[in-house]
Length: 307
Image 1 (cartoon, rainbow, N blue to C red):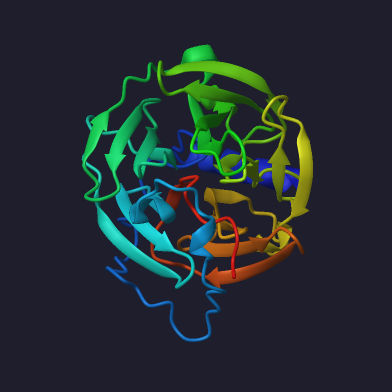
Image 2 (image 1 turned 135 degrees about the vertical axis):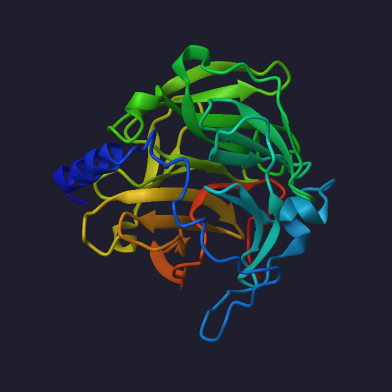
């Protein structure tokens, strides 16, 4: 993506009242409700079924899937093996702020960061919501992407990683990688990263980020101890070479592949894209799903391979 055009797009969004990389509300009401059990439709290759034997023990079925939240507070479950979207409910968190990013732990509990800089605890069963003990704005982390990562391959222990910083700096070229100790809800810093990524972890203990504002747009594996990029996959074909920039984005790992939920500035709603890390192949799973997805969360219970 051409950096000049991306910056122009960002300035245009700010001029229209955007208070961050994801606007607080979609003026169109969040798109059409696809309803429970939405069929993938003809011609969509959902891919192989997951090998259920490799998921670490002690996980519930609910902890195996990807969860999504849109800019109008709708919580959804996404099952990649059948390309099924199911509406769970509407968040009713305290206050009037809208979601910014999301993570899901091994208990299938969603933790949703809102535009008010607070993290809310959300049930993936019924979308009920309550405020977490997290104190906002620690170490300058006002808004950030986040994802749980297994501490080692197959481990039941996990760490919540975050990447962001001051609200005014989101989308402007750099951010800070950090951790949240969910026992004390305190933040520590790891290092600097180039861009404003959404994060996802794997049951194999790997931390990955989707960088929509990098040149080229990319998926990167990050060192959990230093924030250094260990591997980079070019996914710029998602944008189609137009360079108008991202309007909303989210990111999750499932079944050995990455799922990018991306809405460009000129798109009607979010599209779903699948990235195979072994080959670097990028596939379009769906276009215009009818929601403006601003957060995705997947637990470390998700399958790490496909059969």
